[in-house]
Length: 386
Picture (cartoon, rainbow, N blue to C red):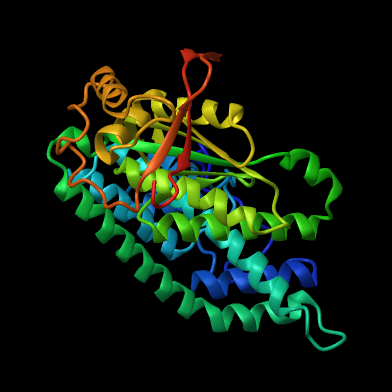
């Protein structure tokens, strides 16, 4: 959309997506009409007027969804008008504030843009490798999208409802209102060591396969063991858990799982435990920053945690740090973090079984950029029988 409120202009094609000057452009317009299930009819000004939405607000919605300004091209459809009307209606009814509606548009746009890009790249790449000679990607794109579109649409709605139900359950169980957006979490960053150097030596296809294997392995393990993946960043993955013992087990399992795959570089994990702010599906705050910094100084194939995380494990899991009196140091750690003495029934629920036991080794204090002196702890599993 555009700021200009004029009512003219066209896009070089008629309102029904007619000739566009080349075969590729024609295929693109045909695909657009198939996916949107409607022809181009409106300029941005006309769409805003049809939706009874101020042009300025319509432009903000459009940009928040991740779409560029299009001047006054006739490129919008009835679906765009309906979407504008629905968002504006939520604001007018008082269900959402204007800023919240913008956030809804932005978060939905960012999530679906990545999803749509991945789906088309993957499907077209995999399904056009074995096409008959003489056929191009454009030749197979239309029938492929025509077959996949209704199935993917239904699956997307199903997964969204499932995710919404899971998030709603956590919100309802929150003891206080502020726990919805701010609460104590274990935050972990898992990072591939030497990825930048490795990426210079690999072909693009090999690099893509490595990243996909890394993300799939880590995501499946994190989710399967009760954690939540917040985001992936190519060679890094950010995850959280309400339970520090579960988070510790996940971190060590990630190290162990990737160590078995010779095609993937060594992994290192940094974790911190404390207050975290959640917003638009992401997490923020000092705890998140500390976990990130600990990752950057962690040795390969190792997990570093902060003092508060160590205290939580002591209090919750009765962990005996190597070379120290277990109960005395555990109580000291717990008191320093404002937790009950170790061995008591703490704020995280029942004590875990013997399978969730860890060793802690204090490391040298070191300055961490923006956070001052930090004393990291090296986390490892305690062998069975100790």
